Image 1 (cartoon, rainbow, N blue to C red):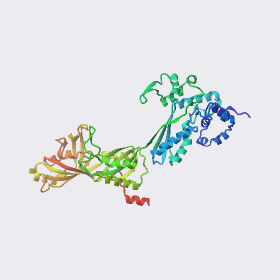
Image 2: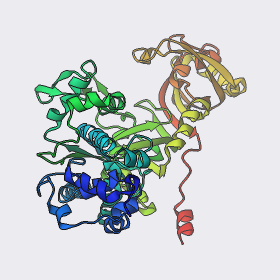
Image 3: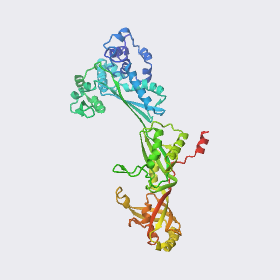
Image 4: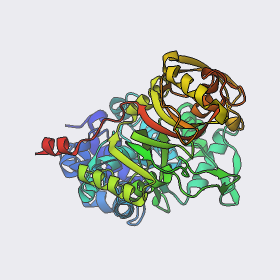
Amino acid sequence: MEKSEENNFDLVYHTLKDIGCCQMCCLRFIGEKTSYSYLNVEEIIKKREIILNEKAITGNKIQKDNACAACLGLIQKPYCDIIVERVLKDLEEADYDCDTFNIALTLPVSFQLRAHSMFLYLQSKYPKFSNFHFPLGVVTVGVKDVWKWVFTPVIAKLQNKKFSTSSDLTITVALKYADEEKECISLFSMFPDKFSRTKNRKNQGSFDNFSRKSAETSLKIVDSDKFSECYAVPPVIPDSNIVYDSITMLHSSVYIAGRYNKLSRVLPQTPWLINGERKLEGSVEELISGPMKRIIKSQDTRFAASGREDVDVRTLGRGRPFYVEHIDPHRVQIDFGTMRQLEDDINKEANGEVFVRDLQFIDKSALEMLKVGEETKTKEYRALCFLLDPKERDNCNNRLKDLSSQFPVKLQQATPIRVLHRRPVAVRERTIHWLKTTLLREDKDVFTISLNTQAGTYIKEFIHGDFGRTKPCLGELLGGIDVDILALDVEDVLLDWPPEVSSKKEQLSES
């Protein structure tokens, strides 16, 4: 019984072989739509009653060394194996410890031209077959789909990783084709207004620059006859095959949060550079991020904290919340013990200038807590103040006794003179919630104050007044006595973030 055209897989298969298609592409063009088909080729060939006789194998126009006319060798042996070997080699050298991966291919525009040409040929040669198996007017399974179905399991097994489209590790493999420019010239004839010749600055020469997206859009609307005039239908058997060009690997950022104490009065929070020159050696950021980067093996880091202290201000107590973003980390399988060792390494290398605690991985969504805290948190400070006029000692002591009762106090603070070069001029209202003080020492004209303030309060300016730019200042609250500041410490940043890490609790939970 003669088969109808819609079901004559054998006829269509051998026609595709005769025009230069590899076995995998033949399956694509006869409508195989599942990964199972491409992983079990012999079974599918038998199921579709395709007869692989000697003539079908050797008596076609394709030569032994020619690449497939549809995929240019991407899913055809031995070319595909060479590409996979290069991918595996580069992955091995990159040495990511992420246990999953996602992979993408970047293909030349020639693939789109050849795919369109193949489909037009199939439509004209076997219209009933084409309309029945591809009612949407496109070949359902692309070469990228087949490549991923066949080769991602191979890569996963050899790399001991699982393939996942939601993986944090994305691998992008770029492929190139020697005759790309020659084949894409046809787009000039099809769309003279859309595609133009541009200068490729990198290669310092003339190059035809075609956007994959614009080519895809254009091929959807091009007239079949016009396409056939400008490009061969079916496509010619290629003289060269697709080859590996480059690989890009990128792991999503990971975030390590913690709290730090700054114990030095000559250490900036971040590198202090003016006109490209360092004003002070080292910084809190570098002392923390450096050891982390060595462990995480990230390409770069970004440091952020809940506010910042001046160079000459210490941060004591529980410390200041911070996080470090690690860009493209290669090591993310960091266990509890390694994280504690990282804390020890940072503290040891900091030589008493910085101390960190509570290091832990956090989700990106948790960073919002730090930003929200910027507006809502309060801080506690301790300042060593001194009396400018010794004759005011007795008066000052009397005023200090009753000072606490005046709080809370709302301040009107104009942008301090010392930061005018980097911040806009504005007057901000800030609240000091409470203040406690000691009396003047017997032998010195100094006293201490402890205070709890709204985030963003300029403490130094509150104490000395900043030439009248902060009102009221401490001197005004003392009845017009002039005072200034000798030293300032941050006693606490009242933001419970990140969660405290308890080694005992962790050990109990693990046992």
